[in-house]
Amino acid sequence: MAAVKRTIYRALYGSRYDRVPWGQRIYVRPGERLAREVQWRLRLRRAELLTLAEYRERTDLGEIEEFVVCHLCGDSRQQPLFRPTGPKGRWSYQVVRCPGCGFLYRNPNIRPERLGDLYANGYSAFLTGKYAADRRRRYRLTMDSFHPVFAQGGGRRLLDFGCGAGLFLELAEQRGFDAAGVDLSPDSVAEANRRLARARAYHGTPEDVPEIAVGGFDVITLWSVLAHLPRPLDDFRRFRSLLAPGGVLMILTVNAASLQLKAHGSAWNGFTKNHLMFYSAETMPTLLRRTGFAGVAFTPFYGDTVEAGTTKLAEPLQRRLRRKVEASDGGNMLRALAFADDEAIDRWGGGLKVRRLPKYEG
Ligand SMILES: [Zn+2]
Image (cartoon, rainbow, N blue to C red; front, side, top):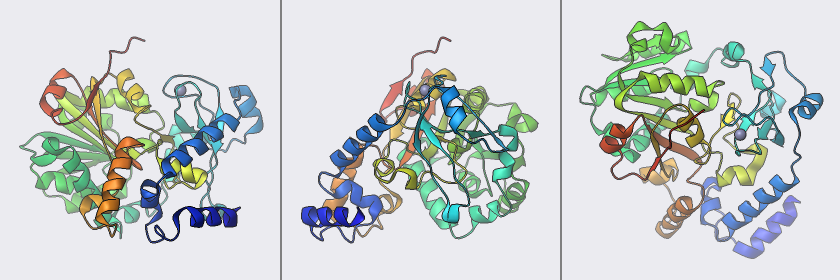
């Protein structure tokens, strides 16, 4: 099968795109987007649709796991789509799609009280090791994409939820934010506080820390945290209540509408060991609307090297990639700015395509 595919690609494209990395190739090869969308439709059409009872019957449940229904719309029907598996089969889980709203989530899910089991020792080393430079770059590029919010802190209060070893808090304090963070890993928090000058990191949840529980934050940031949250509605209600009038919530997470997911299926790089839920620009507004946010804006993600200007991709192909990302999936990462209220939209929505969210009655 792989050999047949290679022959087809060779006939279609010659060797023109051989040196373009996979993540970019999908946006620059003519016809690729259409092919992936067709592939996706076929996959959805072929996928079984099961009741929760049927699904439970045929699915193994691990010791720290529980069966769940769609977190966003409550639909209990299950469309099993993917089974991501780690190197040498060290971990594996099932991803289902909600036929009601299209949300992708891990089912069985991890029981919230056992979440700590996923974060073995060495997680803080992972957060500060050789990936630190890449992470700092991604923070800067994402802040730039929501420019006025992050340009100058001016003493505004910022909460970084899931702050890890404090790499982002460090940038936030340099830009003049009055910054604080929380994280569930005590090692990471200790490391963060060694790094920081004025900002503080705290161990625990926001309710555990009086300085944070009082709320009144102008900005809350979720850097690659959302996909890890087993009870997103509860968490987002809390974020909404911690925001001051005019406040915003910034979210970076993997994009479940990505063409790369449609192309690579279970092997997609967004299906990492500890990810539980996978949002898109279609499904995230439901979460925000249900938890009291007034609007949301997404900015396209072109890839770190393209945005930083270090890509080897030729200029015309870069332009093609940007056009394709804007016209199709918005990129492999999802970047969102959620507005607490109308005041926040007036203050920070300029230059962004803001989608207003109707009030949730329910
Ligand atoms: Zn749903």
